[in-house]
Image 1 (spheres, chains in turn blue, green):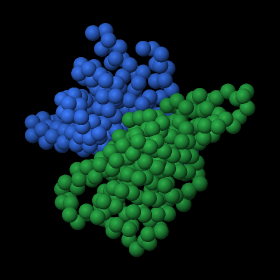
Image 2 (spheres, rainbow over the protein chains, first blue to last red):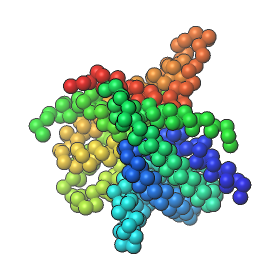
Image 3 (tube, rainbow over the protein chains, first blue to last red):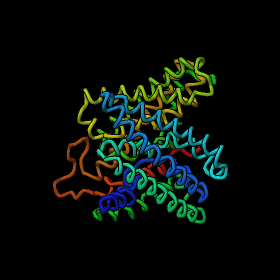
Image 4 (tube, chains in turn red, orange):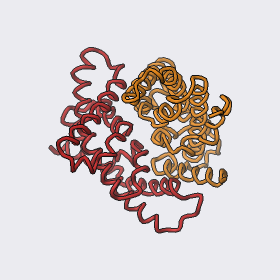
Amino acid sequence: MGDYIVLAISCILVNNILLAQYLGNCPFLGTSKKMETAVGMAMAVVFVLVLAGVITWLLEAFILTPFKMEYLRTVAFILVIAALVQFVEMFLKKSIPALYAGLGIFLPLITTNCAVMGVCLINIKEEYTFMQALVASFAYAVGFGLALILFAGVRERILLARVPKPLQDTSIGLVTAGMLSLAFFAFKGMV
Amino acid sequence: MAKSITQEFVKGLWEEIPPFRLVLGLCPTLAVTKTIQDGIGMGVATTFVLVCSNVLVSALRNIIPSKVRIAAFIIIIATFVTVVELLMQAFTYPLFLSLGIFIPLIVVNCIVLGRAEAFASKNAIGHSLADGFGIGVGFTLALGALGAVREVFGSGTFWGAPIFGPSFEPFSFMIEAPGAFVCLGLMLCIMNLMGKK
């Protein structure tokens, strides 16, 4: 049990997917201008990432490895993720319309979110067991949400500040992300 | 739409250079630019995928039904990424190791899918090839430039060769994640200063 807690903390804070592993930066900058979109994106990612992490782990363990088809991993994983996103979208639309209305526009974007694909590949690369992969996927997703929501809060404040013209928008966003990343950098060596 | 093939190529080098003008494909930009070699290696791999997928998407643009086009594009891109991955594993093994999971992640690089959807699915093969090649070369230049800045300041070397004297203390902030973000943000700012219309 203790091992899982250490793993979770290291995935959320120390190896934060956005700020330390550089994955999923396009939605990070794209959806962080407003708090509502950031929260929507964070929830959508938690939902899809956990499912994708588990399914791709099973796919790797029970289909790709036994049949020696590891070279098809990239194609297989992206197909699973694309199909999963589509399926989740249809399922939510029919059964939980309220959640769908909240997540709706963010779900299709997740297909090309490298955080999802990245975590699936990390799970395989680190040779995690099933439980470890489950915990790691969830923790990475929580880390993604945490960083995104923190960043959206900072960015809403920046809107009120007077930023020099050439630095506006994405440029100041990246510099701010650098500062936030520096804060997360302090967690290094904790685990 | 009356642009010549040369114009389609040139626009990728300045007007629409990713990731500065088109803010897409940030993850590889930040992650693999610790050194120039890695940056350029990543750029070349992405260019290969971009050119091949643009040509194939353009050739098949009248056959693929528009409802399933995104899925079809992703399969095409994933195929070429697998090709690149196997080629790099065979011929440039050290680079393959240092780029790690970022090679399979070219699949989800939004530049590639973005060009397939926005350009290649609407234009002829020649133009799509020029567009893919131009954007790819622009991306390679951008990664090389960012890699050069980070390598020179972060490790005090250029293409692996030391350029400062032995007394140089590496500015290790540049090699780590925070340096990547700040450095890219400042380069974007310089691009904005230079390219004001």
